[in-house]
Image (cartoon, rainbow, N blue to C red):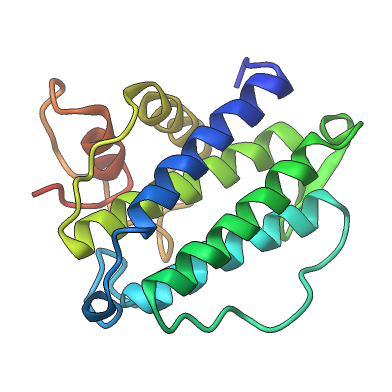
Length: 189
């Protein structure tokens, strides 16, 4: 990424705002629905999304996540838990000096790379969630283009197995959010 830390934090906030709006559309009958992440239903996907935001925020602060995993029983629970995690994440990324050193997400990496992982994971799973619950998958094209650019730098063919399916062919004129999903092995409908 060539954006300043402040610009990256603003993009992350935009991703969190978008994702929060998708999560707010989750109804009680949606929690057991399958998702494009075949190993997870909506409840498990929400648990992962919230856990990832909390975990990355903890890593940014130099510690491991604490506490029990989120137990999602309703869309309202998920929205409240995600909003809290997103606020903690923005606070962690906004701390002085965060972008000066590495962040350990299982391996030490530059903070800018960890920010890319944070953005990509959150935005991609917002698409997965929208697809699963029949919600509008569209998102800010600038955010989707930024995530697509980051994913092309981060995700090699060697990195895909067990994490992402093979890239799905899609028209170059398709919306950025669907091109992002296709690059990550999802099948936009």
